Image (cartoon, rainbow, N blue to C red; front, side, top):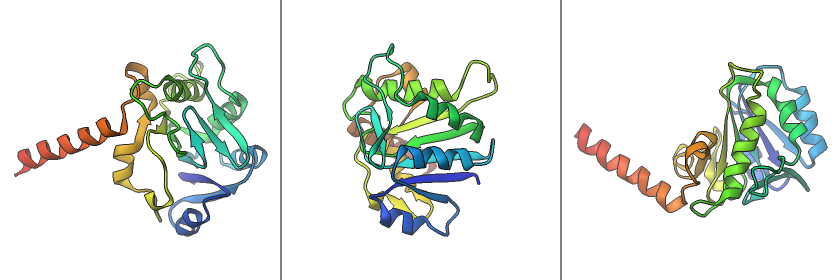
Length: 196
């Protein structure tokens, strides 16, 4: 079970589209249901865990419950840290966890709530005693729509313009969507010039 997506109750069309593909698809309407799904996953078997539900600057829901939340203060613990710690043994050492709710990483350049959401979750998923872990957390810097998904998950072009990683958060503030899109356009122009 390499690729797992947990989908909230309001995203029926995405769940239907992804059923039967290469992803294990789970539907959850509460924090308890999410915890049950996590507990049932095989140890060290998940390479990518996507969580798709409603979110906002610095938080993501699962159903009617708040799943993870950061207030932007580095000293405040991540809400539901125990759930993140329960995820650790289920992930491979280089797994990706992607919080695919609207603007979970923030939407404005330099917005700290999104930055600390990904940093705190990455810190919990890469504990000091697990020296070999290199797990990356992603959050979004744009709204997430059902049409952003194919039967194989989040569309690749959307990944390039809407995801913000815990690696980026270490050294930089969250880039705006416009800046990220411009960087993608600039790289394509350069690639085209180099490749002919």
